[in-house]
Length: 221
Image (cartoon, rainbow, N blue to C red):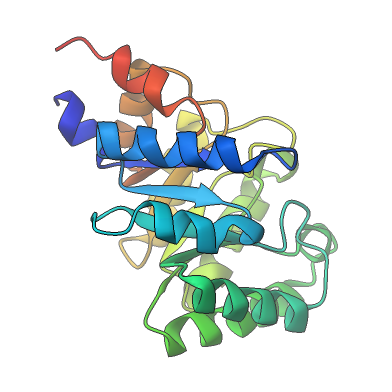
C-alpha cells in the first residue's frame, strides 16, 4: 500500500474542545495536501470545515453525543440533524455506554435508531462509537449486533477520549461480528503507519486519527 492509498482510509480528526479556527484551517489544509478521506470536527466547526474543503472530494464528519453518549436520544437526533444541515456527510455518534453496561440493549438500540432515522433521511452515513475500552468482549459483540440491527453503516472502536483505544483484537472481533453487514472504523491511539496497517489487516475499512500526517509520513514508500 502506498501513501495515497493509505490516506484514503483516514478520517483526519480534530476534536479537541479547545481547538481554534486556525486549528481547523490547518486540519483542512493537511487533508487537502495528503488527500485524506475526510476531516472530523465537533459540530461547531462543521460549517467552517465544509467551506474549507469546498471543491474537493474530502468529506466532513461530525460527532454526536460526544464523548460520553449519555444524553437523550432526541438530543442526539437533533444534533445530527443540525450537523447535516451545516454540511456533515457522515455522523459518528457515541452509543449510550451507560445503558450498555446496565444491560439495557433496548435503550441502546432505540438510541442508535433515533439518530440513524435522521441520518438516512438525508442519505448520509452513520458510525456508532462503542468505546470498547469500557466493554467486555461479550458487550462488544452485543453492541455490534445491536448497531447493525439499528441500521448503522459502521461500528467504531473509540472516541479517543476514553480508556484505551483501538486494538487489533477488538477490530478483529467487531469485523467477525458484523459479518459484512456494517464496516469497522478503528480509532484511538493510532500513531504510525504500522498501527494503521495492522488495523486494516484486522478488518478496518476506515481509520480515525489525529496523528494522520505522522501516519502517512511514517509509511515507507
